[in-house]
Length: 124
Image 1 (cartoon, rainbow, N blue to C red):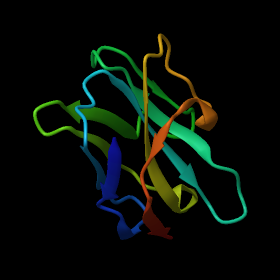
Image 2 (cartoon, helix red, strand yellow):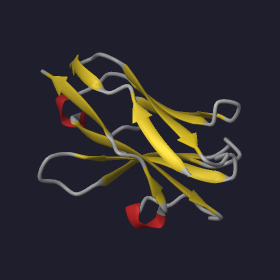
Image 3 (cartoon, rainbow, N blue to C red):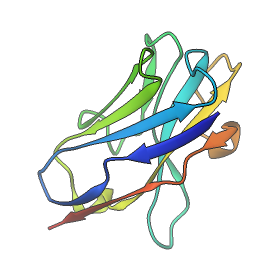
């Protein structure tokens, strides 16, 4: 499966932005989908994930209540709606996928497929 992120950009603190992750090659309905981010000089960190049944989601404490992950099976796409953005949200955001897992993992090495990333920059 191939993943392609889009929707990044430069915004001001307090603004909203929606990232999209379009999958191709296979349907992602059976995949757990995740979003990670990596800021300059920092390790890649977990942001959010959603299970294949759409019933279970997970968020990092730093984005909980501000970000929402969702998926559209018909479009084979996953979204990350980001609100109340802060300068510390500045990073390259990556979409990731894994099939056949029972639980959502927050570890990047648990995911098998990755997109190329999209830059999000939040100015103060």
